[in-house]
Amino acid sequence: MSVRIGEFPVLTDIDLTIRKGEKIVLIGPSGSGKTSLLRVCAGLLSDRNGHFGLFGSTPATPAQWSKARRRMAMIFQNFNLYSMRTALDNITFAARHLRLGSESELNERGRELLGLVGCDGLADKYPFEMSGGQQQRVAIARALIGDPELLLLDEPTASLDPETIAGILDLLTQVAEGRFSGRPMTVLCATHEMGFARRIADRVFFMEKGFVVAAGTSQQMFGGGVSDRFLEFVGAMAHQRP
Ligand SMILES: Nc1ncnc2c1ncn2[C@@H]1O[C@H](COP(=O)(O)OP(=O)(O)O)[C@@H](O)[C@H]1O
Ligand SMILES: [Mg+2]
Image (cartoon, rainbow, N blue to C red; front, side, top):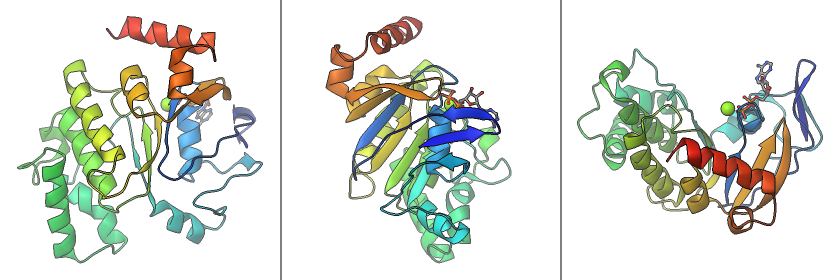
């Protein structure tokens, strides 16, 4: 599969099949196409060439895409909460729109999720009243309310300070393992956090300039022997983030 934005080839010859329950980590320098790949999966970039499938079929119409989107959730670097909505409302808003439950059911589930992500007592707070870490926890609760099978994570800790990062990565590890949903999730995650990548990845894809330049299991990739360029990149990241 290849993807263009205008004339620019953001992704070229991407050959990636994710099995159910598998955790895939995308690693690569800024501008390598990680966000674009996640956006393709969310149906946000449609100028594609080649085969693309999701949950066993190729969504084409808006109706097919909205059906597919109900089975996935995305978590962003900048949390993307609605600034004029409370934490609880942020969690339940889209689910209400999609009629995933009654008002009281969704509020109850929303409060339960707030507790699970470690944000008890924040239901009525607005994003500006919360720390970055708390906002990302709320965004994680929002992602979980539709009980998604596929989780798309776009550098979920890149906007957080080092002390907050570890807590969010722990939470995401639990989420990925299905701790809050009863079944392990399929995960596609872009991150610069190498420890986390090593911990959760079944397979690692190293991207540069819109190409997947190296791929393998976490052990193969981090163990060496697949790509010196990848290890060089990992080394540079470790140097930046002690
Ligand atoms: N909306 C857009 N218009 C034009 N170019 C874009 C757009 N979005 C991304 N790109 C380009 O596509 C390339 C890949 O970007 P992106 O997927 O955001 O990479 P990453 O997430 O790895 O930093 C970059 O060169 C970027 O400038
Ligand atoms: Mg990006």
